[in-house]
Amino acid sequence: MSEPLPGFEKPPLVEVALAVQFDKLPTLRAPQLGYVWQAFRDRFSKTEEQPPLEPVFEQFGLPPGSRPGIRFEFSVLPSTPRLWFLNDSGTELVQIQQDRFVRNWRKREDEDEYPRYDHLRQSFCADFQTFCDLVEREKWGRIEPNQCEVTYVNLIPAGEGWQTHGQLGNVVTVFVSRYSNADLGEPEDAAVNVRYVLKDDGGNPVGRLYVSATPAYRASDACPIIRLALTARGQPEGTGIDGVLRFLDRGREAIVRGFASITTPEMHRIWNRIG
Amino acid sequence: MSIDLLDRPGSSEALSDWQWTLGGARCGVLQRSFRAYDIASMSGPVMVPFSDGFLVFSEQPPNWFRELLERICALGNLPENWDSYGARQIDPQCALAAVTLLLSIMNPRIPPPSVVPTVRGGIQLEWHRGDVDLELRVESPSRFHVVFEDEQTEEQWEEMITSDLSPLGALLERLSTKD
Image 1 (cartoon, rainbow over the protein chains, first blue to last red):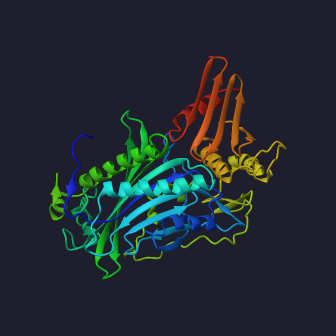
Image 2 (cartoon, one colour; image 1 turned 90 degrees about the vertical axis):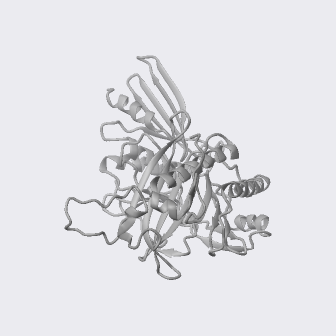
Image 3 (cartoon, helix red, strand yellow; image 1 turned 45 degrees about the vertical axis):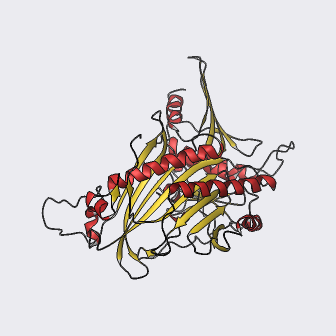
């Protein structure tokens, strides 16, 4: 992938998350998470509790459809929550649970501008290092990354290239509303889920790119929107934070190229594509 | 078996998603007050006791897997220092990984493995069939140490597998052809 990355002057991007999953630290429970917050409190003064996320692993070489749905639940101990640390404006988040660290940017107001990947990457790197240093200093265990994840979320409002949820094909190239006859008419709505295998420079599978286009409504005014989310997930490409960053960079590139590939030229004009 | 939580396309819950709605009900947190059901009796979600909790299956495991599942779950009863030399309790995440892996790669033609606890809290699965030995040590949900030896062909193979599990299928197929 040596060609310059495509870009857009007005992308419909509303949230970006960089995440690393690691082997669970059983000693990292609610009190310890509160102590972690002290290291971030000067920049992230607000907190929220969320239920923990289930671990997810991208694996290859299994028979199709063979992945069983199983999880483990404690019957006695309450689950340790996922803590959100938020800045005053709510645009920046750090999320921590026993086996995951996530760094988010999100758009809260129309004037909030995406700070760009390099800036978010730097923030992720610095904040994850702060967390790792604290874990090591307090002897809570050893952080062994096992999966990395990049997610870009776009909210595309009606009135820009499309009017109804049935016109998904006006927005994404992977949905074509084509029929053998006119009996069905235009769809009321449509959704698409596609996944692609990501490979390293040697052609070996290292992760997957998930694309989902979902009909939804904006909470503020019930305007129809299409939620277009792209997630790249896979194993670190090497040890330590460098291995994590290598996959995050690969995932981000796949997402940016994938976004340009699966959205229509008409939408590119609306978003002012550059490159 | 249906694909459930482990195969969600993206960590949507790691996103704030505060400003939009699908227009329908969202799933709530699973209640913790379930009773442990007999795995032979239920067709819906099934909870099998392991250590301080449960392995929760989205649907009933196949009958041919039951005995193997019971042997794995029995390891959950091992206490700390079960070998009197400081061995750790079996990590539920390793049990989960072992069960998930076995359900993904095994079928009724493949002989069931021996199930052995490791002192570091993992689970080792062993097949010894004729001249073929296969040992698979589940060290974590993302690390599987595999050792294979075929005395007849003098093949030896040892590798740490993380995401590409395709070699396991081929090795197990070789076991299924041995007496």
